[in-house]
Length: 119
Image (spheres, rainbow, N blue to C red):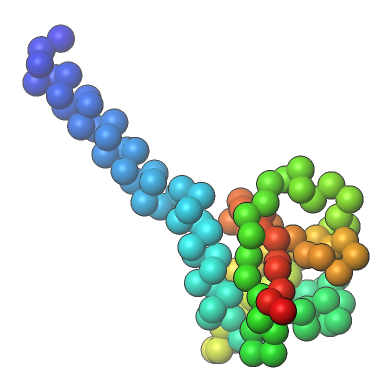
């Protein structure tokens, strides 16, 4: 194989890697999840009670997220899907909500996040 062909293949593979890191990496998905929470104006769900949804009102609650894994949801009950709406009423995203004794984990864009409340 010629040097030119080899260089072309290497550059192609590097380009694919950069595209992946830019659009599909866990950090990118985490960042997009945080942006959605900043843009959200309302939540709704067919299965999650209003009492649980009130815990995600960013105007009255102060919380942050910690990164978790699938195994961290052991012992948690899956309450269902929660839909996020922006100020124009459009659905901007959705997440699965897990709860255990008032502690919450959400699963959104392939990332598990714990919800930690500020004191």
